[in-house]
Image 1: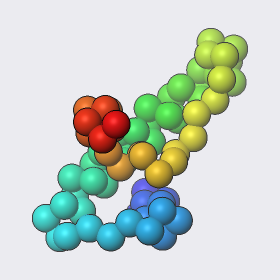
Image 2 (image 1 turned 135 degrees about the horizontal axis):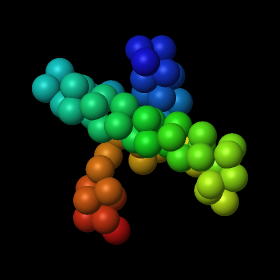
Image 3 (image 1 turned 60 degrees about the vertical axis):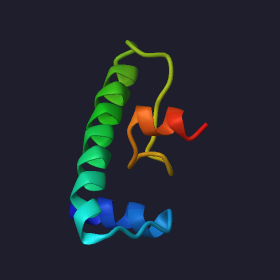
Image 4 (image 1 turned 180 degrees about the vertical axis):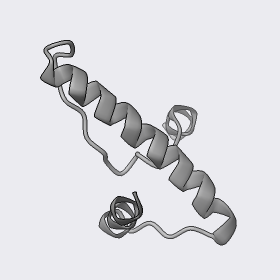
Length: 68
């Protein structure tokens, strides 16, 4: 995941403090795994759409809701 994580950071202009990096990466990894599972189900016809990582992939759903 190191390369994908670094690519995400570069693409979305993310920089983190040393103390925040592990937290953000952990959230990103969990979201990446959830998206991969969803897309696998979409490929099998069990989901109607595909998902992808985006600029919100390093935050939790609660953080996203709070930012609105």
